[in-house]
Length: 238
Image (tube, rainbow, N blue to C red; front, side, top):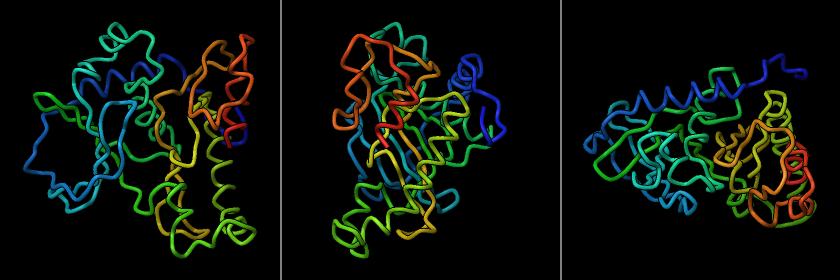
């Protein structure tokens, strides 16, 4: 571990968190949630991310809607059905839930998983500014060039801290990209940074033959058969 004074997350702790998510899944109450708009497609999970209003407390939340036939009732059933899948939604949910419990601040709060007859709904805290990719198109952000780089620098510094802390906890994200960094609280230097989409994350420091993430963010060595350091792959993506 490093300067953050955290214990390394173990496979047992992650498995326990996943079991907790499974055990706490509750029926989806369609009358409680009001659709505001679609946020983005969730292609790797065969679903969509929605902006919804939770009428129980009048707060907006992010909801990832996925088919139950994809996510399956449990993580074990998912692994049995899709043993070669590079995207693991149960790992995503378990890690997000557990990271919050160990005090990691660069992840969205996990509100729970809810089930209808055919769909699974994963509800998390909403980041109102959007992702770093759309930040580049914001009207108050300068066009590509030196001024934009100056404006992005304090945000990028927070991303570096977020990834460093994640690594100190023993987790490699493996899918870092502009789309998987969310901002909340404005577009300036005071905005908070959150990492999302942990479905390709691993607790293994060294792997081989496991190319993960978007092609344009992949380090060249993942396309060889040599063992690679998963933390270094994250650093390359950043």
